[in-house]
Length: 164
Image (cartoon, rainbow, N blue to C red; front, side, top):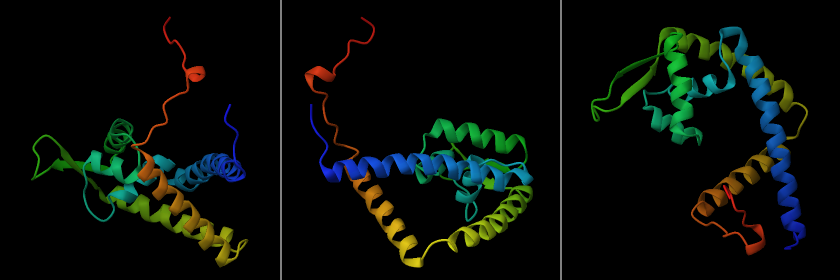
């Protein structure tokens, strides 16, 4: 069995903390967005299309999610009047998703709430801590993006016989 190096152990601990933090951030986002009928996921989609209409696939790429999961969120946002779909001039097979006035108003409310929340939390940390954390996570993301094509094949003792 391969042992973790100290750096590997530290990275593993960071990953666990990021997973925990992700859950907390999604819960906080849900609370920030709840007064206008949004969730964190819906808020994120609205944020991606705020500056210009985009296809569901473009939104999914920007968010690092699957097209199918974003499609479900987009469909719900459309049913509730937060987004509208229009013909895509460059591709007849896809639609462009854009904010409706209701969606834009909801997004602005959540942005104001998020600004107050972020300012309050940021008072608990130094600017250097925040910048270092951001730089570390950004760098780790770049390494992960570059590593996506590499897969470590399972060792013989890690293989399972699914379905047998």
